Amino acid sequence: MIAHLQGKLVEKNPTEVVIDCNGVGYHVNISLHTYSLLPDSENIKIFTYLQIKEDAHILFGFAEKSEREIFKLLLSVSGIGAGIARTMLSSLEPKQIIHSIASGDVATIQSIKGIGSKTAQRAILDLKDKVLKVYDLDEVSISQDNTNKDEALSALEVLGFNRKLAEKTVEKIVKENPSASIENIIKLALKTL
Image (cartoon, rainbow, N blue to C red; front, top):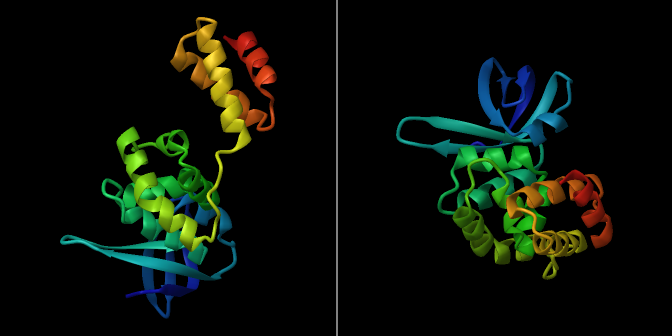
């Protein structure tokens, strides 16, 4: 119904903006990703998605058309509503979401607040083919650091460390050093654990 808004930026904060379009102020919910891309200039254009519920009409805004398309895809998954979809786009870059779905990375999607393992698996199951087709990706192989991470975790478990504790430590190490080898991940984890 409302595809985009172009007008004067009246208010801007990390979760919402108000855009004045010829004297009418539109309250638009945004993600942190969109917030980071919005210019501080007065005149802006924002792509929108209007959600109509029994008790409310809610506008969601996006700095890029591609982010809006990902939002729509996420809404098509049972268990993911507009709030969780917006949280996903605030927690991860749209490209990270696409890559996580395409590669079947349940852990990354599950790391988002409000998403459990079943919802993460359902999102991957429902969206993997669509994401591969829409974004013209070949079957994405799980990235090297995930393999390294998994092998390092297995090694730490064999050494007798608690799985949950080891997982948090390894996760942190891989975030800080994405190209770390299995040996380096294990060495760093042993220093921390």
